[in-house]
Image (cartoon, rainbow, N blue to C red):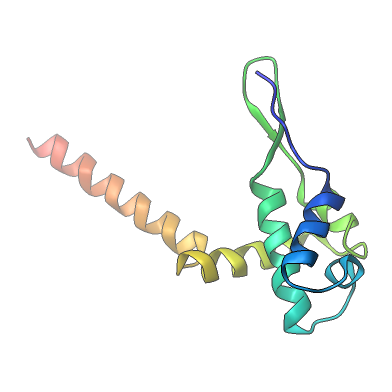
Length: 116
C-alpha cells in the first residue's frame, strides 16, 4: 500500500490560490483573518494527511513541530491551537468536546450491555 501525499509547499500554494492571497502570506506572521484562516486550513489538512505507513500498516503523520517549522518557525502549540480552532469552525465543536461526547456514548452503551 502506497500512501500519496502532497508536499507542504503544494498545500500552501493551493490554500493561497483558493483564498486569493500569496503563499508567503499563508506562511508569514500576519494575524490578519484573511491569512489566518487559510493558514489554519493548511495546518488541519497537514495534520490529518498520512505521509506513509510502517511495516505493520500503521499510518504515519507529520509532527506538529515539523509543520510549525514551515510557517515562520512557529511553536508546535500554535499549530495545535490553529488546528483546534479550524476543527471547531468546520465541525461546530472543539475536538476535545466531541471526544468527550463519544466517550460518554461509549460508556452509556457499555452500561446498557452490562445491564442486559
